[in-house]
Length: 147
Image 1 (cartoon, rainbow, N blue to C red):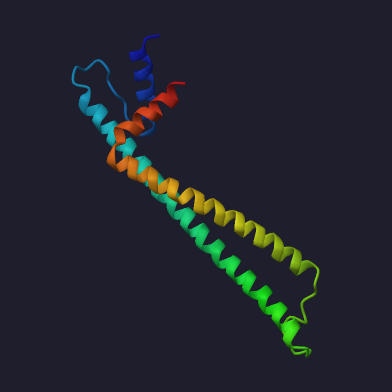
Image 2 (image 1 turned 180 degrees about the horizontal axis):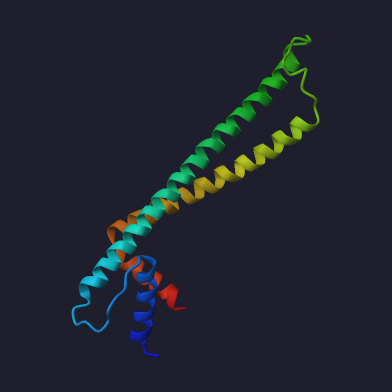
């Protein structure tokens, strides 16, 4: 199989994702390929915007949860040191299960926040690359598809 046949197969696969059928027998195929390239680049930008927004929301919620857990644990420890009365709201909470759930939530929130911090710049970088030089990104994707 020749390289041009491989490229045509890859372009057909991409065109199927957008519901397009390309007639390769026509002489003026350039408008079809330009339309396909612009749609593919637009799809990548939108998917990266959605992923970045999801990571931003996950990071914000995880950060909020972490701050609240740490604030409550700090308040609980300060109450036990400075207030020796039975009127503390923490006296009603047993030491077993809430602490285990709190630690599990703390760990899960920390991991989610770390993933969001790592992945959000990746999404922003990908959006910038797709908006500035989509041809380079398309060639990289085509190389991956032909492997």
